[in-house]
Length: 460
Image (cartoon, rainbow, N blue to C red):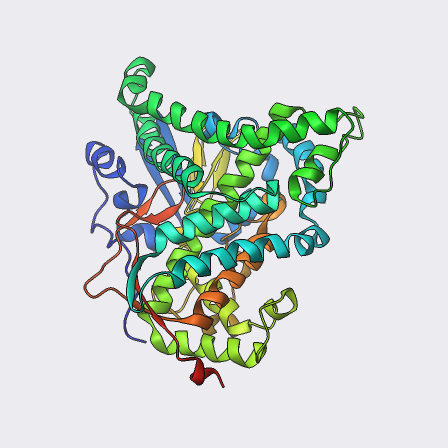
């Protein structure tokens, strides 16, 4: 495998502060340089911000596992995401986060994930119907397709509500605006832009986009919340029903409407956007490496025989799972985790002052030559021979590891198996993705892949 999947080539040398501003306004990946992928720790001086980048896996473990309370989620990140997420477990810290996590945990037990499999399967069946309406050998915009199906899965499994195209377009367009403007807002804050100017330049758009998404979610949640408050519990078996019924053992009260809206908004962001990113990049990699695609296809046919895909089959798709894991390594959906130092602390040879920003970047650690053989190459079999737990962080680590990890893996493997069973994939000739780092790692110019229907006779 001499060919490497595309990634933005880093600059030879570190950019000046002014050039950093120009480069990172579009994507934080654009400001990386060669040493970023080799260093153990790095330092970036911003006009309004001291930022430390930590690649040393021992220090990463210290910050995310051993001394997690000394390196809480960044207040800056909380401020950035609050127009959409409010006070959700994605950005809160301390006792508030701990209580929220405990209240959410029952919704994500494996029994709950088993129950929502049928809802998940219905969304995937509708996705396949949309693909089947295209003429054979059509070029399909996969990024859009994956964004829609993962949003539909979230709507059905959390709220038992199918996502229609009009509502889907409204909410997904708003999310694109929110992502783009969040990067611009972050850079303006780091460079001391006054709030009134930042508001005019894009904060207003960002707040409006967050409101648009929250309103769509609110319209679905409100009637259910009011019904439960009136004693009508309905017959729903979705995640929202669990959130509506869970009781805080200390206060003996349920979540308020606003608290539920915050958590559902968080589940929507974390549940659809990150999985959509991962799936898009996995389909890109499968299109780039036909021999790996065929191995996955043969495994799917061998496992299924003539059956439809059921939950018991997913664990048997071992090679497909390795392909997805390798995709998560090369293109981690959340490319960086933002923390801040609660007190002065020494990290290797650097003194990190209280209040400084700390970045742990899976994008860098997953491509670091110290931790991985051929770090920029695509090799799914590496997970059978050199899996490095401490250098593999697609879902985070420690007590803040993604609460929906099992849900996301199940959904991704289900979607990939359905697509590969029916289609051969090939990247559109001459297409090169434009990798950008915003809230998630996406391709700014989409992902254009040719879908060719498989000959059913080949399955026998």
